[in-house]
Amino acid sequence: MEVKQVKLIYFSATGTTQKVLESIAKGITGKDVEHINLTLPEGTRQTIPPFSDELVIIGAPVYGGRLPVDALNRFKQLKANKTLAVLIVVYGNRDFEDALLELKNLAIEIGFNPVAGGAFIGEHSFATKDVPIANGRPDSLDVQKAMDFGAKIKDKITVLQSPDAQMDLKIPGRFPYEADGARSMAVSPVTNEDTCSICGTCASVCPNAAISINGSVATKIELCIRCCACIKNCPTGARVWEDDMMKTIINWLNENCSTRKEPQIFGINV
Ligand SMILES: Cc1cc2nc3c(=O)[nH]c(=O)nc-3n(C[C@H](O)[C@H](O)[C@H](O)COP(=O)(O)O)c2cc1C
Image (cartoon, rainbow, N blue to C red):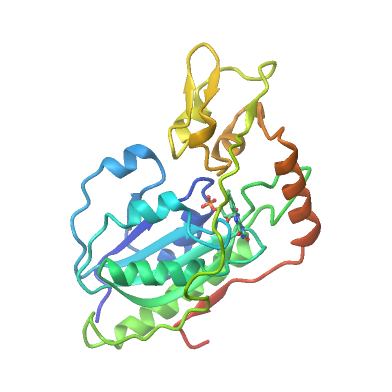
């Protein structure tokens, strides 16, 4: 089979998942790829026709060893008809636990035929310059591994007779899932009014429309998913965590998850 077109579908609040998917796609095709970005609320309002004979790469970050609930709900709206899919989770150098298995099960439920999977590492959403956790990842080594993975996916598909070929992709994880997912903590980053320029960037990058601007920045705590898009995109560094529990978690991750992990790939002979 020939890969005629590659489409990327993703939820990626701080951009690491998107970068990994783009790198894999580069290894598969030199042609333009289509992006279906389901990160922002407006992304979910687009009409997405059912998938058929293209190759789709679906990616999401790992939140608490599972898929983010918003990613799961947005992916559930998609429909496919035995479309070949590459499944990717990106995690912050702690662990991906049941997230990739959850993505595989979901992909099959909505009609995809998973051809390969991968767990890559991205800078942890909670990391800062002062408290690093996998900072700068995916880095050039990760990008190279993602491109090599893409090239091997292309080789695997080239020898397939049809898109509904039996794949039997083995993915690590436990079912019923044992990881809890992102716990609801009823906390959100806060805005330092001395440095905030009220530019509205934080509101424009929030996947859950939790932030509004009306002379100052207001955050609906109950909508915050702790993705940290507002913190990482604030041009003046005015969005920060002040919550003590979050600071404890971030310091724990910094102390316990500093040994570099490497991407793992599944469904491809290395
Ligand atoms: C609420 C929350 C929970 C997270 N849970 C995990 C986790 O269980 N394991 C891990 O290694 N990283 C975890 N992370 C880090 C993200 O998976 C990681 O930073 C990823 O690269 C973010 O992807 P994105 O840039 O596409 O948003 C978590 C991040 C958030 C915001």
